[in-house]
Image (tube, rainbow, N blue to C red; front, top):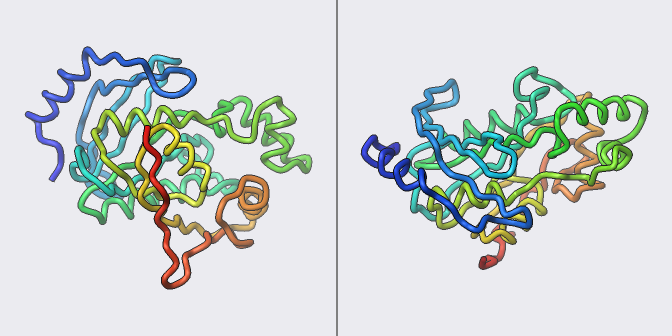
Length: 243
């Protein structure tokens, strides 16, 4: 069951005056400004639109069912990728990750995809194109970002943490192959009770990209871009970190 109109009105009224000290080193504070239905080819969803006080970029939470106040909510944190999400680029696996996560979450009682406007691992679209140019000349994704004066990953996960807090989600199961994403969310007070491997096969154009994720960025992937899957009996739960 989705969030009903009466509950939406209550949430928006509460959020209209929301102010807090903020999350993370940049003291990011977000608030929900709209909630609307979004029927899609992947399932029936609602979208909660967020404003943030750092750069006024809009972020959205794509909701299936009603996750508010729930525990163990299947959650994907997805960073915007214009070239992959909109144009179908084969240089990355972003569009596949997004579509698979929406499909998987639509099969659950409730779940969330957080869509963050953090293009190019947070370096922005223009710098991402510059990084692509360097990659065309032989650098990997990490080397290209470093050559442009950035870290390997410039994304800000305190935004996601605050969004989950605003949705009153008590704990999540995170769809990811990236242990650092789990750690970042935990550091911002998110209770992550499990990691759900996110299986996306490689193609001929993104194989090196995925191998770089594995070898340089610590993602749990094999040489073909398939995630490390737990052996029978191997736990996938991760420890809790309190805020």
